[in-house]
Amino acid sequence: MALVAVFSDVHGNLEALDAALRDARSHGAERFVCLGDVVGYGADPNACCERIRALGGTVVRGNHDHACSHRVSLDWFNPLAAAAVRWTRLQLTAENRDWLRELPYEAELDGKAHLVHGALHDPRHWPYLFEGADAAPHFPRQTLPLCFVGHTHVPIVFARIGKNVLESRLGAFRLEGSDGAKVVVNVGSVGQPRDGNPKACYVLFDPDEGLVVPRRVEYDAMPTASKILSAGLPKQLAMRLFLGR
Image (cartoon, rainbow, N blue to C red; front, top):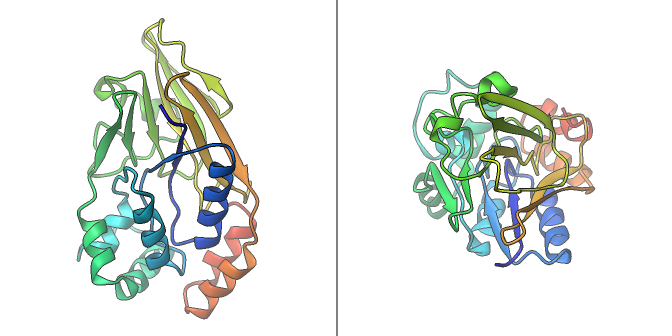
């Protein structure tokens, strides 16, 4: 099978998305999977939708995709996120809004991996998996050895071995597939990393070899930040791009 680039949480950051796609293609990626939150926070929601739609790969629904394409309450969003959602709702074309509205909550990649924005035990409400205890209720729903998630913007790995859930920083690894372990890989964020590293983050996955390789890609965040400020979005959304927070 072809090498797959798995990415998440673009959040309207076109410069970061383009940099990640260039990097993935330079390493031989031929297929692309997006784990949601195409929009929100950034100033290029339509361009990011159109880039990702043109890839022709699987895309699952994130909480920002849902909020920006549906008239739902924003009480569960913090003020920065809510302001960005309100702005994005006004910018989206009807075609992109309809596309976001129809995205599935979860999917599978060739019977090799689950795909979901938050977690499998409640995909319609996007639980956050920050630590092993958060991931524990997810694993009973995971029937495949591997699951890719996003949502927290922090790359991390959770593994259930027997009754224990372990966590570690995301590094390159190969699924052995013989010990009954199940693994959740948070691929981090392309458009708004929050692990202290402002470089765009995504994962390359070789389905034949079971190989997972994280990638960090530098890009020029200044044009992205300038567009956020010019759009009248909160300045914190521009500043955090340089901090990775």
